[in-house]
Amino acid sequence: MYKLNFLLKLTFVGLISLLTVNNVIGQIEFEQGYFIENDGIQTECLIKNMAWASNPKAFSYKIGVEGEVKKILLKR
Image (cartoon, rainbow, N blue to C red; front, side, top):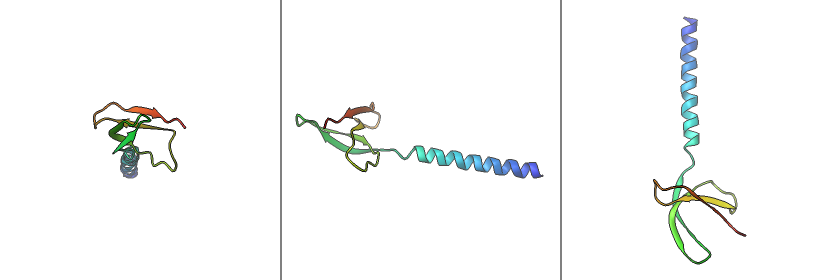
């Protein structure tokens, strides 16, 4: 009986841990936005939201939901 309760608790804790990790990993999202290049070209895209506290040195974006993720390094 004790082993059964232990296994049930262990399974429950494992399942909750797995769901929590999945939820935390899924928090990074791409949001609708745009960027303007130095030559004035505006690109509509999905920008990876990293909750920056200041201006980033680089950012990732993709054109459309299924698009390839690209990274831009910003020059200062």
